[in-house]
Length: 179
Image (cartoon, rainbow, N blue to C red; front, side, top):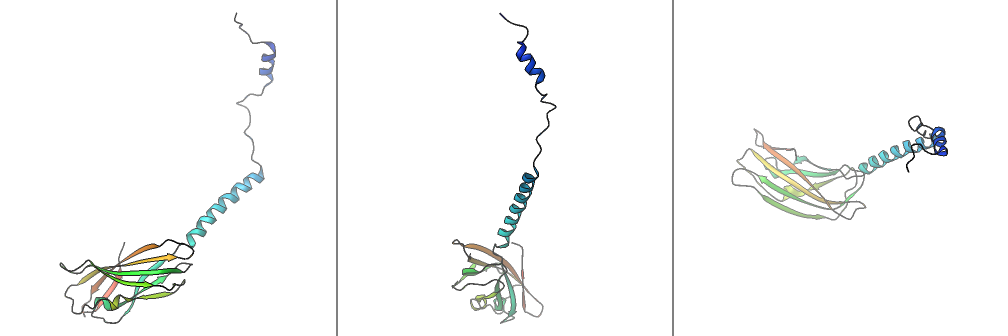
């Protein structure tokens, strides 16, 4: 037995029920919208805060002890971040100097002291090699630095590729090159 019509109580319920297509979406309360806005702003501020405390170091040159020797230049490590760095180890690598000379690594030991923000530390590459009367016009070297940022137990590594060019008067000029 099949019926063609629904019972009367079901028909009345269908007629009195609101139409789903015409139903309005619930409005967000101003309090909830304010909490969502503060949540987004707080997340962005947290990301910016974390990025501000990441260590930033750089290697540059400052003067020369022996102007006619490519490693007579004084290199220094600068801490440009907001926190100190510790357990600093660095090596000076001669990557390329002429066709038959290169791939020399000079391990210069560890500095047990901390490098405070905004301070510089001299790297002793000038004491490791003495290369007077070099016949080649350029030299590629990499200074590898390993350090531990404050409040972190793991070490980080940074490589600073440099290039030295011999000028007309025989002195060497160092510049940073892209990594």
